[in-house]
Length: 134
Image (cartoon, rainbow, N blue to C red; front, side, top):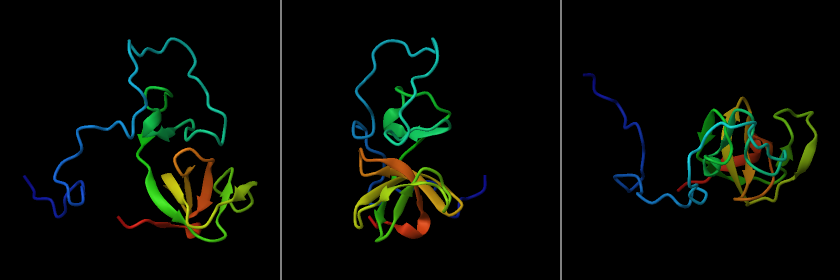
């Protein structure tokens, strides 16, 4: 079996994942989850869910093909939150410099995510955010 040149996961100073994950999960859902009709839809810009992807905290509440763990980034001065990942897309608002933008997806020069834990959702240019070093 070939040897890996780098670990698959980086847990920082930890050697294993935390057993308790309530910080990323909604309250426990009792009963059987079944596809009994159309999925509930979220208002655009309010919850971090779109047709193909949602925040991991919404697993079990919204049905999408993929769930993502947020990657926190710091908002740089002048960053604009937009409804789509294009310069000509309508602006939602200017993001407050220094705040956290939780990135859930990156495509090209754009990141899709949410301002803080429960703020507005949209797209921001990668040049308007930077990774928060942990």
